[in-house]
Amino acid sequence: MSASPPGSAPAQQLAVRAKVWERQADHLVMRAREQALRQPRWQPFEHLLELSDDIADALEEATFLMSLIANNHQQGWDMMVHESLSRLAQTVLMATQEHVKALAIARCLGTASDTADSDAFLAASWNVLHAERQCDELLRAARRAILAAVRDAPALMLADNLAGTLELASDRLLVAGYALRDVAFGAEGIRP
Image (cartoon, rainbow, N blue to C red; front, side):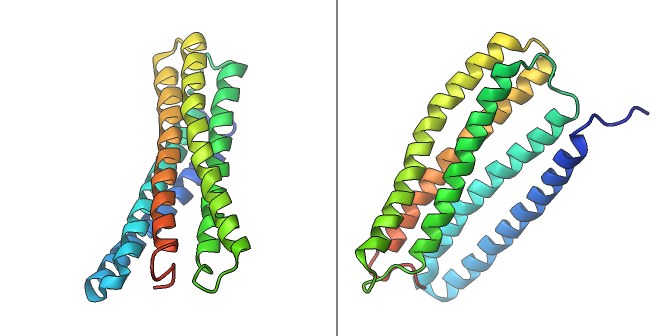
């Protein structure tokens, strides 16, 4: 039996952790559904959690793909492929951080909030939108780099799937961001 390639163990561990987090997100959605059935005012939060679960699904799939790639499926990947996928992943990371920031700010928004809180919330939301638009272009650049360099079918498929899944995560972040904005600026604010 051959040894695993260097770097595959951390990627495998990350994929396992991501699967656990994704299952936790599923359980939060189920709890929110139960809560929304008992108290209709929880319905916007249930919807927001469902959309957030979609983000978790995409990110978990991306970590799974990275674990496969780390298992010696990078044949033909040149520096351009690595850089283009890295830029895409970094942009999704930044969008995720901005979404988390918006969530944290939204918890405090209400009729008594000052303008600085609303401005910070809108800035974080705008950053998610901007990142999603960047990811559209970064996906195209990644696909061009992948097609120019990779000839090995499994490596090509995994690279393209990773790029597409990362871009999907940015789409889902944007959708959740719009829903968050609707909840935060709704009549009752973010507090259930």
